Length: 245
Length: 202
Image (cartoon, rainbow over all chains, first blue to last red; front, side):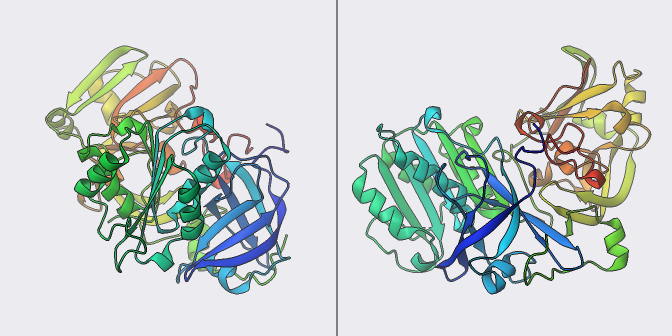
């Protein structure tokens, strides 16, 4: 790869910032980057007047070939996320590089059935997969299970409801942990082993690819549950944020 | 390029000297892994040094625990831009491991092999001379599964993806063979002070 490769920093212009939930904004970027694969991320770099710079990675939520959409959750003690929530406006320029990442990715050619499990803002790379999948015509079962404390804290809920209404091979389950479900099909309990086993049984497919993204605690809980539900570890890919003692 | 309105949160001068470019310091201990955390039974655990397919030496858990112990305290740096300062580790240095096996490194490169089919390449020169260990304890406690327990490689002067979790062996290779992330766009060496994050970083 040359200096024109995905690791060269380049300018991107913020086209739009809009709230998705009370704590998550959608950031649409205009950037001259290569087409991404669903699941990949961009590195973002912000630079202060004295040259001090901070960089972070954010998963791309948009479908390949579409303008880059990042979703950014506000971390109260964060350094970069508050900039996108409190300061950045349409027209501002930031630096980005990418698309990057070669493991937590899915292409239509990889086939299915596909099981996606998201916790909170961990939906970003999975949303890219859902949107990519929705562009393909062939029937291929895909189930997206999203965990959020309330329906209002679940990003893209309405878009996912519309997609479920239009595609018989798409199953969307909202696992709402701190309030009543929004729809009759929503679950109002944690995604433990019995819940996951039942969801997969009702779906009626054996997944070939499983992607789990969210906080480390969420991913640990879900992957232990999936192991109990007899899914092989080798088919499960994870992406995590945050830590453990 | 200056970002309008961004001021950032600078580390203190003392911390800044210890922070490689593009990193931020965290008190947290983030967890990253390509898949589920494997459950490893100590009764079945084995650690093997090999040259290509040929085993050179191997230890079960009790034998491994009887090897000379080494402690190290210092800073670790993850390619995802967090750094953690003053971490305390204990385990068996690669020097002691080679001495116990009675072998000299048969080549200049190796692949660290993990129970979850992860692997990563490290030059042997970066593992000997007191620069690396197979760590079994963190902060005085047995290493938890999420952080790579029962045993992980610790090569603190390289980005932390080189410090393979759930280590089951070291395999000497004739050439510098790319491992899991190195095959997926990450740097072959991974020096945090040179920001060798991705394969085409200098």
